[in-house]
Structures are given as C-alpha cells and as structure tokens.
Length: 201
Image 1 (cartoon, helix red, strand yellow):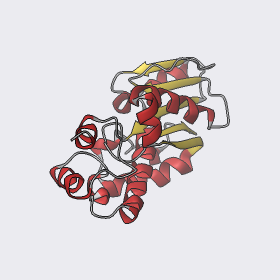
Image 2 (tube, one colour):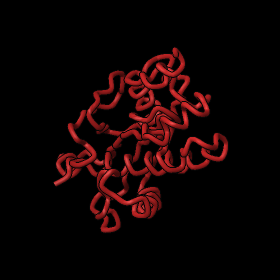
Image 3 (cartoon, helix red, strand yellow):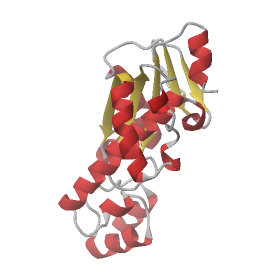
Image 4 (cartoon, one colour):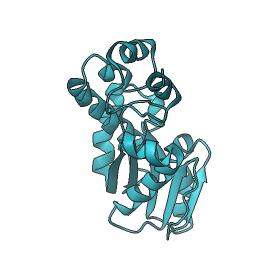
C-alpha cells in the first residue's frame, strides 16, 4: 500500500510528491521535480517505482505516462554555481520549495523523499526511502531523472570529452581521467572534494 492511499482515505486528494536527481554528481545541475497525480490507482501508473530500479527506456516511457496522468507537475534546475554558493543540502531544500511553488496550485499535502521542508504552508511529511513507498515521490523521481539525463546528453555536445552522456556527471574513472586531461569545466561543482582537489593542485 502506498502512503497516498491512507491520505486519500482520510479525504486528502491534492497530494504533491517531490524528489531530486543528480545529488551525488560532481557536474551538471541538481534537478528537482514535483508532481500531483490525477488518480494514483490508474493502471497506467502500475509500473511507477523508484527511478533507480528502472531501465532508461522504461523511465522514458513512464515520463510520458506521468506527465499525462498528472494534474500539475514542475521540474526545476539548481545550477552548479548555486550549489557551490549555498551548499548542496540548502540548494536541495530551496529547490524543493521552488518546485512546489512552481506547481501553480497549493497542494493539501506534500510528500518528500527523506528531507523535511520548512516554510511550506501545506502540511508535509518527510518519508524515509519515499521513492519506494510513495507513488507521487516515485513519479517525481522519474521526472527528475529523465529530465536530467536528457540535459546531460545535451551538455555532452557543449562540453565534449568528459563523457557526460554516459556517466551523467557522476564520478567514474573515465570522468576523473577527463578532468585531469581537460581540466574543470564551468558545469563542474567546484565545492565538491574531487573538483576542489584538482583546482587546488
């Protein structure tokens, strides 16, 4: 049973789920999505789960299903520069607030994956491993992941040689070697330990 079922049974139907993609990457933006599903019981959403458990092809398919089955959704980017300026955790929380605001409607309840968001006018619940037990959080995780993957593939053309289309900005041996060979690009997060170490050598 998803958390939404209990909320709906108590009369709460306008539920927003929020999740992010790219938190652990050292290049590219943090992407945060918020989504309000029209009917969590719709059969077309039966395959929705934590984006990490799905193949890229299935995520792409479900992206279209989720956007079609949502009453409202938003996807926002937090730039590497903003992350460097105010820190990852604060960027994440600020981004979640912005994504909820960008829905254009006040949800009755907000579900977030693991992190409590202060300053919301609607009641909210931070759910441990939320992308596994809350359908709307799982849906948000797919929107954020697909959007970010598409963006990193585009950035690969602007910053060739780093392999961004393959590793999506996460730390791999190929990425580390490219950083040594090509140096740090404008889309790398300079506050991250591996990037900071290269800049300070």
